[in-house]
Length: 456
Image (cartoon, rainbow, N blue to C red):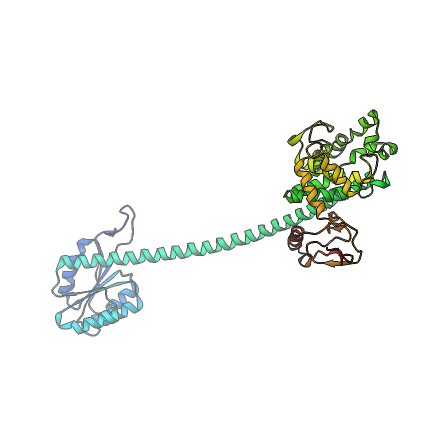
């Protein structure tokens, strides 16, 4: 065996400044002169050159040394070159294999190609430059394969790390999602409790106001219901409708400080000083309510509910569109119920008379658009009292024209619709959506059938 090392650096190393193991070339031939010739050919190329005179010797060397390229003759005593390269492929598949063969050995060469998976075969006599080029190309191909393998391993490791990172990220996202869901549920619960709290407060305030005078019992709720019906007719959104309902139930909040005697007198019969005291109640109500954050918008509406469209109202003398839209609606709804209670003029008016009074003041006291909406709403109401027999129906089976037999309350405790309300297609759709959104059934109490001769 010969071990020649002309240079410690591979001639094809990618980095000339880095010291790496030289390329090891194993030459195998049973003829010493051919080995010497091959050794002289490759020595100047900077390879580490090993030689063997038989296949067995070559396999022993490869077992002890790392070989990059094996260049073997075909015809050798004992193990042929084809057999040697086949054995080398089985044990060291990364080693590049080149076969030197004569024309007469073509069948054996084919076996070597099939069994030994040789890189190239070179016919004798060879061309030195061509053989050196073949070896160099074999080395480059081997390096490319190794680089590809390293790259594949790197990519596989990066993919493994990426999968691990994704798994950890998914776990963190899932944990964070759970935290957010829990926080959202807690926030929703707190919001519900807060909503129940302030709606309960509104009901208490309303009852306190109405407890001062038996005639006022239910006034706030009726005004709220009418105001909402008018707002719906004017296609005002649900959020504004809810604000309007709150304002309607609290619109007389400022009257708490007035005497029972003053509360009992119709406004048209008051003396100048008495009127002055009463006219302070919208501003006083705003002052009482504005400190409650959820009621601030309602407080502003309450302040404006006695303003007149022509500017003759109080407390600020606003006119036309300077009065908030919800304030103009509340003014009409409040007047409609107050006229029937007898708290505005010297006597109680029938629903028809109350409507006629408001229509006669269209464009004066009241916004014409709101008055027209009131007329439409009143036209849809039943003319006489309905029968009291009752049934409780889910929203999906309700029909337009059915009449509520009692107040419809939300599960959270606030009023949805008042007794006597005539159901239309719009409210049916809203109740169906609400039932779906809340995930719990809504049972609507309606009169089972109208009196004989009446249409629902």
